[in-house]
Image (cartoon, rainbow, N blue to C red; front, side, top):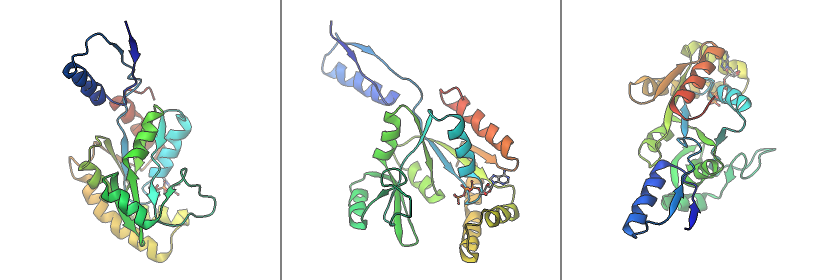
Length: 228
Ligand SMILES: Nc1ncnc2c1ncn2[C@@H]1O[C@H](COP(=O)(O)OP(=O)(O)OP(=O)(O)O)[C@@H](O)[C@H]1O
């Protein structure tokens, strides 16, 4: 007997393969499934300054082998220290537009005259390593993902209040008066969308950091087949 070992990325791939084998009348192949873990990706969104990066940094630190970020594409030039393929795929505008038109992207967004986006391949690259793919994206991206083939879990991180969000953004020392104002204005619309029932699988208020992190950790381990 031929023993064939196939590693499937997800259960739907396995089901499709079984169906194809039935159609081809192949019966004598023993399939050893290797669902190592649930490969459902995680989408994390929330207003700028709500604490997404800080929470994810802690998650990656605690579980370095379980999660991986999808590498986004951008048309903006690299900043000092940024590596192509690690921080972003730095791509020419025409090339990126062509890939988007070819349907290779799950979500795209335009910011300050540059295009950004998550390709299907970027997510698959993480899944291929056996890790759970995390997409940290804007609300507009969330809406596009909902119309894509990806079936992730949606996590919304919200600040305790707009005033506290402003305090944190100021404390981060990354914003000009103008960018701060823009982020706070966008935050209000994002909160409205995030808090609307059904838009996210969980809404985590990041008031006390440790408590918010525990909620995130518990949600992931309860929904996915990973022991966090
Ligand atoms: N629970 C908390 N209490 C107080 N400060 C916090 C808390 N969580 C995060 N912060 C601080 O708030 C600031 C914003 O957090 P962070 O950079 O993680 O936000 P973000 O959502 O990733 O923002 P962006 O989308 O702009 O990257 C940081 O300086 C961080 O240290």
